Amino acid sequence: MVAFTITDILNIWQQAGIFAYVIPFLIIFAVVYGILNKTKLLGENRGVQATIALGVGLMSLLNDYVSNFFSSLFPYAGMGIAVLLVALILMGLVTTEDFSWRIWFIVGLVSFVAVILASLNDMKWWMGGQFGDSWPAILAGIVLLALMYFIIYGGEKKIGKGGP
Image (cartoon, rainbow, N blue to C red; front, side):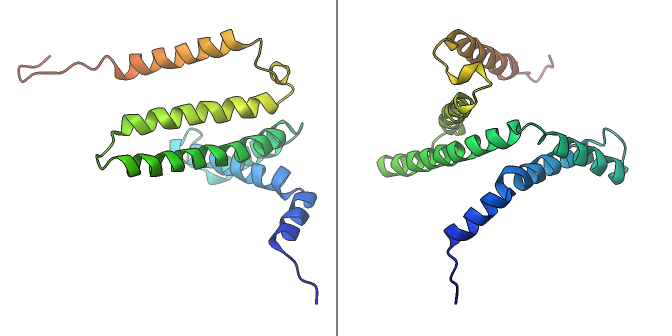
């Protein structure tokens, strides 16, 4: 009797290209199809939506950029989720107060930026794989994101009973 472990099965799937091609294709296909179906951008013909999603999903796998990025991104994303979980547990240990969603948004945003930067650092085609010389571009991106946040959410005006 031949016994397979989960590690053996996952290694067989990895050698067969399930993680490099099938899963990224399914993710891209599902997201593109879902967006086209929800927005009705190209009408309500599901055949057209599926054909476009199929084309985008297949074409995205041409040069292994997506496969390499996914294989780098998702392990880091798992670590980011673990960091958020540990932060949640530790904050629950020291306080009984309900924390605002803004605190979790900030912790999540920092984790998100760390995951993206670590993943992009693995990509040799993006900035040579090193962030050492690109800190001004990263800082400018952070400033732009902060400005977008304050433009969208910071300028809300309170309307009184008398109107605007």
